[in-house]
Length: 355
Image 1 (tube, rainbow, N blue to C red):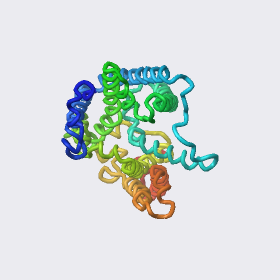
Image 2: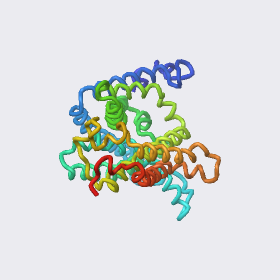
Image 3: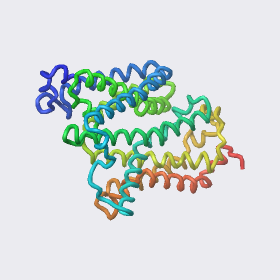
Image 4: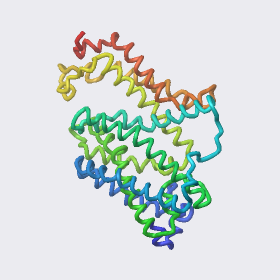
């Protein structure tokens, strides 16, 4: 949007001329503006965040439908194609590719999935949470994916090349108004997504490490500073790094998920003492040994170590394929190892689980 209005700033968008750490000067400026806006929205509190997100979702859908309508007007209905490239795999040969893609999506969502309680705690009822899941995940995921594929396929006849990024597609439209409107909408949507995926969960996580010293807002700011230090644009520009990051993330988060599922459903039979979850008294059900559940720690570490083997040993037999399933490997091992250690570490006795 900035370059469309002020094309003279183009040299400052060149990382080789004016840039450092992989980002041009103009990129640093726009990133800083977005960073401050996100932090400001987060700082206002959960109720404002909820209202902001309620606006973000419909807003980006409106722009995507308008964009698709514009491309259909330019190219015609007959140009819509749900296949964005040559079909390389047929029949059973396509199954491993599909499963690998599904595994990658699971790893991508593993963080919010593990921190689901940070969102479900604000649900009005369990039914409302289930309804939101149905509408927000499978139905929305499928609908938006189809919309993106349709839009991308229409860029070929309209612009002469395949453009998979909706933001880049908007930038190709010969209308300053359309570009500004689209850029602002996608910016608002990005802020909403980042707050949900990258602010709320880590804010609770950092705060829970030391609630007396780290508030929820302070936890969010720690995550915000960390988001700059990891230079995410460098990750985004390298598909191999994206895979490596998601596979590593899955390897460490999978065992945590497995331990939680095993403890809640198989050990405690869905019985939780909420008051004891928020006490550090030795008499609490979840004090275990000096406030730590050794079985959970060992199971998490064991699952993560084994799941990381194919991620790091990419040259080993079938390791490249196994690395895609790091979340599933870690989750399964974490669950099994935890259940095996429960009797040996007296988890049921220490937390007074009814027989």
